[in-house]
Length: 374
Image (tube, rainbow, N blue to C red):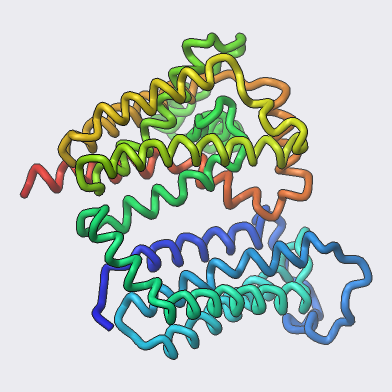
């Protein structure tokens, strides 16, 4: 099979890193357990208390990793047999490594049941990917990708696929990803003593510490602006690698539907299915309509213009989100994620939501620079 620049390879690396973070969260309290053999958990009896949620989470959590690894190896030009071997070995070795590391974290408990569920999940994902490949899905995907996207689009498509993951973590305003200022201020407080001993660090810390997020109720205009920019950002990203014309209008509509669906899912997970649409405020639907309309009107711009517009949109989004106020519902959502059953997925969605717009800014700057040099 001919070798292609595959979207599956960066997705495999990103997903493996996020699985590692979620498995080792909260990454504090590292210690060396005295007199404990690292592989001793394999000889322990099955845990007396376990939930179906934990088993399914461990199983499904590794299925995408197995599928992505199979696709990455096949797309690199190797045989399906070699791809299957890699797709079985990588999830098993990653899970074993993480279970061993959990010996050194007081808040995590290694388990043979978790490891077997992870291995089974990776095998399930690899099997499904292999069946899809044998049915010709790989060739059909390559043909569709060539029709819709330009060459060297893997990075942009990876960012697009990560965008809904970031929306799963509660945001202060719908689609308002990238609010890292409160965490930076907390980190500065923790590093206060060190900062005071370094002149330039002390000045920077003092400046950032005095930047306050809004404490008053947000206006409909401010909320609508964040939602509009939050929807336009992935649209402009898509336009940098999508061929001009009706395909871009279709993608803009798909982005709007995906953003609506994932935000609804996040709300349902936090407050229950009966409150799934509780995030809808008077500003939401008009903002969605404006963003979708603007994205449709811009469907004919060049790739470089799309990158420049995306840079403006992402910068404005980051600036507005940094000043977005919090509310009791947002605080309750965070508590549900940090202390409830979502703790295993806390780091995965949180870091994507925090960093996505900043990675987008870096990518768009690189695109503008590269196209100017051509």
